[in-house]
Image 1: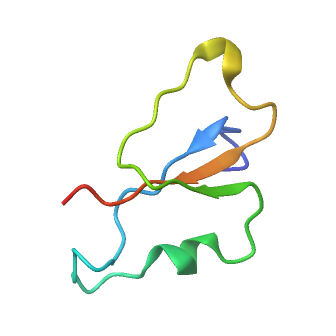
Image 2: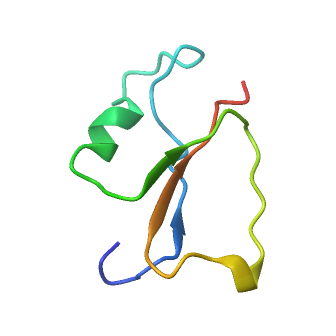
Length: 64
């Protein structure tokens, strides 16, 4: 992530109540990270002129 310098990171593949695959949960990925927002929706829309100046991590509600 440091090399790419993304404006937004959206974790997509992690263990949750609806997906019990033998992979880590999102909290392991988020540990020690700043700029985290957890949304109560499975969709989000960004407009180019409204992207954050620093990298933001957005965790969406699983759709499945």
